[in-house]
Length: 66
Image (cartoon, rainbow, N blue to C red; front, side, top):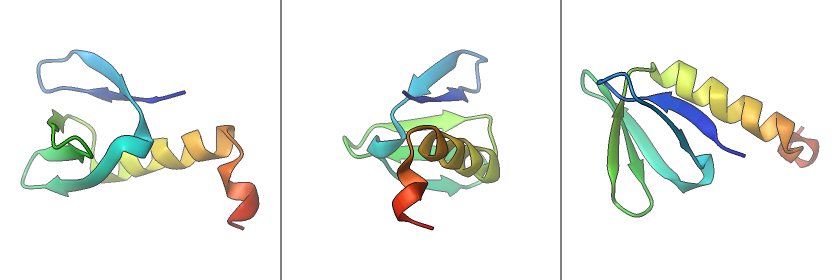
């Protein structure tokens, strides 16, 4: 299972949220992956975080975190 992000050119990608090292906003939102690859996306930081939260709910990750 993955989360969907949209690049600035409008192409949609699905990425593994476990591979996101960090995200930054300056002014575009850039995801830096564990591999060092950077992906600039249209989504806001809040949208990315909410997608990750929903992903974790779907896989049952929150059961041990609540």
